[in-house]
Every structure is written in structure tokens, then in C-alpha cells.
Image (cartoon, rainbow, N blue to C red; front, top):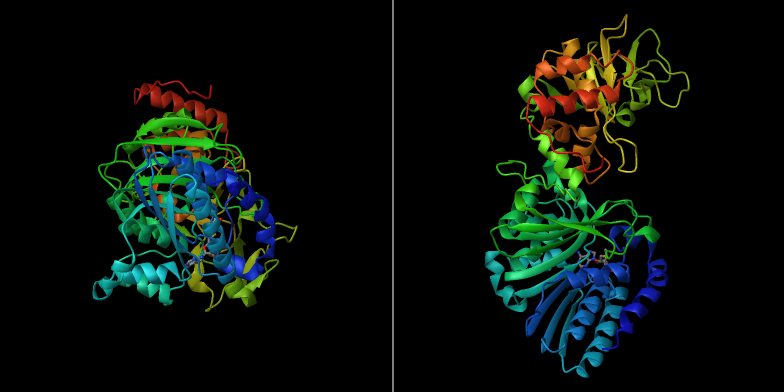
Length: 516
Ligand SMILES: C[S@@+](CC[C@H](N)C(=O)[O-])C[C@H]1O[C@@H](n2cnc3c(N)ncnc32)[C@H](O)[C@@H]1O
């Protein structure tokens, strides 16, 4: 097969991408893989390749991943005699292109003595694969072989509850709410024991309660061989302005989990990436009920993890709760006011955060300042007391991921509204002890918390669930850290130095920071 086929697909890719109907593009997640990434993904499968390969490419688009895989096969043609490809694509236009590309590939491979047969399945992969796994329909399994290899760039968007896809998945025993995780979850039972899967997906499945059942399913069935992280969110799909953080992972359907190769790169080329081998426990901590998948892709990450695991408390152990700000402004639009009047109370957005405290009201009127206090709104309001707030959205390109702010009671009000884009740390009786609040704001402002959070967060949200999982120091340490916060601004350098001193003296952790 001519090695230029991938190049041809690459040169047609942006034309193809702009020819796609923009609405269908978003609805079907048609973000096409660049050839450098496709080739790097194909190279991840282990050597030697078996004599007979059965490859699945669900959501194949024009087939760039399969073509990259076949080019790799062609480079090692002495090992492989036969390849059977099953490529699912439910968009007719792309399926026709896929058919023609696979035909050309088959012709090219004949010269190398490799027999390629292919099936282009113009079907919904979710419906087809999940039905093939449900007992009364098990006969359909005969139509699908067990695969030696799976390569995929699955579409992603939320699966609405009650949709056919969701119902079929549930019948097949798969609980997940996103297309991409459904694709991976379905591919795993179709893979034969020892078989391999390489996928490029959003990183969002690595943490958070929604993806927990998916993580359970994945970790029960397979082991990570490699995880690659793109340092910048737009590295993989810059033309399509996709700002999801993406990762590539290579799984083997076998247990137990052993060592995992971690790599990261700037830009699309994986060649210049930094690589390290870590034990599986560095990815998923033993006994972690949430099965959070961390990606400590450089040595500084070990430095952070070693320190943070010294803190065994969670907010709950300190008697603290965390919730999402309950006021959803567009649902209560009639009750929201730019400036307070006699019958309203303060409404706090993250726009009210200044340094590490809340300033209210703000004059700029970028955000409203008040919410009416009446029968309709009262259930969404909190007593006017002391709270620690954090912003719910921040991106990895920002200076920090966690933005805390102290909320101190505002005179003359009984109630306060917290808008939905902030998280609220509180005590159950809404009477947070000020020293704890001050210490918590200092702690959440520290460098080590920021670095720790970056290890597992793959999206722009900082959810209440993430804060519940954050290791926190004991109350006595929070009291010490409170001294570095004057109620307005935290002396973060002093907090970092104090924590480092504690790790050394109290916990015996002295490993140097590789970042200097
Ligand atoms: C992210 S694109 C990737 C395309 C191609 N594999 C690549 O890497 O360039 C996902 C593809 O899946 C297709 N697709 C979306 N939903 C599908 C479904 N339920 N069943 C089969 N294909 C689907 C889309 O039309 C799109 O071509």
C-alpha cells in the first residue's frame, strides 16, 4: 500500500471538515483526527502484530484511523497475512468516502501479500453493539467477531435519558451518559482477551461522579498500557476550535494492572513528548472508592502526590459540607435585580470575588447584585453567615484552577443568595468558625492544591464533588494557615513555605521539587 494514502486523507481533511453540515457536525461529533495523531495512535499497538487481525473502528468517519493502522501493518507486512476491518459510520456521506478509501487500501495491500476484507456498517454503533450484547439477541453476536484491535475517535456529546441509545445501553448493563464513553464501554466486551484498544477521547471521564460507573466498567475489564496527554487543550483539534482537553489511551483487555507509560506533548506531534513509567497505583489509588484516574505525567506530579496523600482528611471529616450555589439566575430571572432594593438580599457571583474575598455590591453592573427575598426565592437562599466560596469554572491555561474567596456576613441582611457558578463550603448549621474559614481560604490558595487539582481535572469545571475528594489538613493546621490571610488577600508564598515546612517536620517528606 502506498504510504501516501494517509497524506492524501490529511490534505483532504480540512476540505472535508468544512463540507460537513455544521449542525450534523456538532450533533454527530464529527471532529476528524489529524494524520499525525492517527499515525501515532496506530503506532501504540504492541509488536509483533498477529498473523490475522480483526479491527474495529467505530465512528470511522472517512477512515483515517483505519488507514493509519493499515499503513503500520504494511510497514510490518512480513508478520501479517490477513486483516478484517469492521468500520461503523452512520453518516451516509462519510460512509461512502470510507468505503472508497478502504477499497483503495485493499488494492494497495495486495502487492504486499496482505488480504484486506472490510465491512462498512452504516449503522448506529451504540444500538448495534449494545443489542448484540443483550441475552435475547445474543445471536446477533455471530455477526460481530471478537476483535484483536480497536482504534477509535468516538463522537462526544451527552446522551439524553430516555433516548433509544440510552435504553439499549442500560439493557446491555452499561451505565454512561456520554457518547464517547458509551463507544469505549461497548468496544471492551467485543474485544478478545488480550486484545488492544487505542482511543482519543476527552479527559473528562477521569474524575467526577457521572463517569464513575464507566471507570468501574473500564478498570474491571482492561488495563492501561499508556496514557498520552496534550498539554494545551486545542492541540489535538485546533481547526475545529475544540477546547475539550483530550487524551489518547492504550488499553489491553487483561488484568492485573501493571505499569503504565505516561507521556505528554505540546502540539500534535507525539514524538517530542516526555515519557515515564509509573505503577498502576499512581493512576488509581488503592482503595479509592471513586476510582479517580490521575495522570501524573511528570516527576513534579509525584512530588505533589506524595505531599497530598499525607493529608488523610476530607472536608467531611472536618464536619464541613460543600454544595453548588443554588440560585440558577435564568430560572429566577423575574426576581433578580441589578442593584439591591428594600425587599431584596445580596446575590453573589464569582464576579464579586476580589483577591480572596467577596466585595459587594459591585457597581460595574456586569452581574446583578441582588435577588428578591420572597416565597418563591426563599428556599434558594442561605442564612447570612460565614462561608468559603470557590469559582466553579476555570481552565488549565489560567494561572490557577481553584479560586477561593471568603464570604463574611453583610450587615443588615438575614439571607444571602449564591449563584450557581460558585461552590459553597459551609458547616451543617451554617455557622462556619472564622478561623476554619480563614485557614481553608489560605489552604485552597496554595500552590500544592492547585497542582494536585490539575492532575485529575480534565475539564473546566471545579465541582462540589471534586472539592469533597480533596485531601485537607487537620483543623490545627488550618488554624496556623489562617494567620496568612488578612480577610482580603492571602500571602500565598507564606502559605506554601509553611506547608512545605510541615511536610518536612511533621510528615518526614523531604523529596526535592523537580521543578526547582
Ligand atoms: C469524532 S468523529 C471521528 C471520525 C474518524 N474516526 C476520525 O478519527 O477522523 C466521530 C465519527 O462518528 C460518527 N458517528 C457519530 N455517532 C455515531 C453512531 N452512533 N454510530 C456510528 N457512527 C457515529 C460521526 O459521523 C463521525 O464521523
